[in-house]
Length: 307
Image (cartoon, rainbow, N blue to C red; front, side):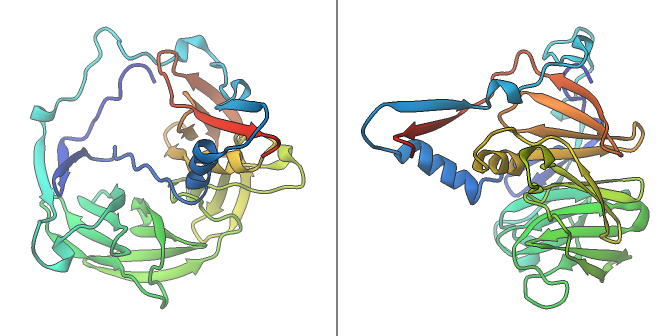
């Protein structure tokens, strides 16, 4: 857990004019509530004394559960990954057939068969390519029919089952791969659907970031656990703590999630909050790791005469 991330992949994917390392693509999503926060922060005007709240608040920045696990940027003897040590593959062209031209790469995953899957936000499609950049086929296309996508926000590859889960509005579509074809297996309507399209899988279950509204703030949870058939199992994880529900929703939208089956751990990290939290698959808090030398951006909440 210490030091800079060490990239174990031996190749690099070049998408259009951008080069990104395999499995380390960070996509920043800011829609809906994010816009509302910016508008509120910048354009709130009025008379009287203003009260400002800086987010994240202190109670939402946890202390490290063990100081030995604090992350540092400089670790002596760390083996870092270099661009010139990897082969390059390219996907996408400036001019060509539709399947060759990329819109906005909103999410990207790979499997053990040397296949790259990416969600094209402009075309509302999920496409599959091999590592040489050859188009294999579309997993799902834009439309309103069974298995078609209206507003996809994320995808998940389940290698052991040769399945691809696509998060689309309030539904999840599950496809199964058979060589170069993709068959719709089911369309699920989760109890608490993904807010931002970030999902991960482990031990015959998948996990996603949502925001469960309970009767009290203490009952709100941020991680939802489902079977591969779409059956809700449990929820756990503490969301951003604040009285105004707008801010827990905003920070839930900016939370990333990852699964590690070897250590049976689900890890989450939220933009603006310099910490990472690990949970067991049963929801038990395992550890919290802080970033002591990381200066995060802040969000300013301005309140004038109660507005």
